[in-house]
Length: 180
Image 1: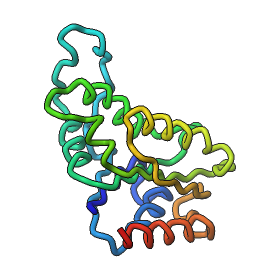
Image 2: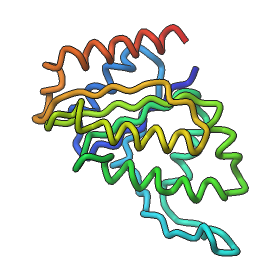
Image 3: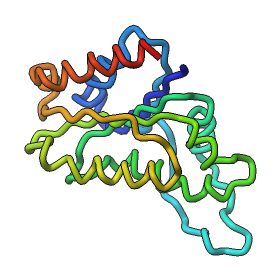
Image 4: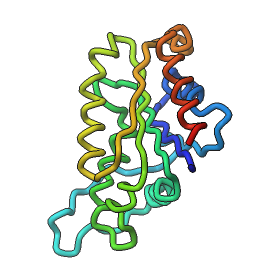
């Protein structure tokens, strides 16, 4: 199984990135840091007769990596009780891929497994639930199986490693991925 980690954090080596790295440690994988990619916000042309116009950015490169992998790990900090702007811009552009004749996007996503890893500092296991539900709805809409999630607590860089539950959850996910 080919694993892709989509890092939505705007901070290098932030808590979400550390937790996701722990989950895939020792597993061959690819990581895409969305903060390093130019992904423009969507210009909604879903109802235009000609569909979406081509956009000169890195989105197609990221989508091609998504389509080439079997397991997708969406790693985003909880920013204002939702996903990061980097992750949101990326997911919003799925509307474009759903109409793109180059891809059987929805069919392809239905063959993958999705995980979410998120961290936050303000009661994230409670206040992060709407973010998890948002991902559940997104994955359901495109028919992609939602295989699980991890919510960790950490605010300052490195604090996530003090969250014993999140660290144990990441280790269990790693074991699960190794078994596939």
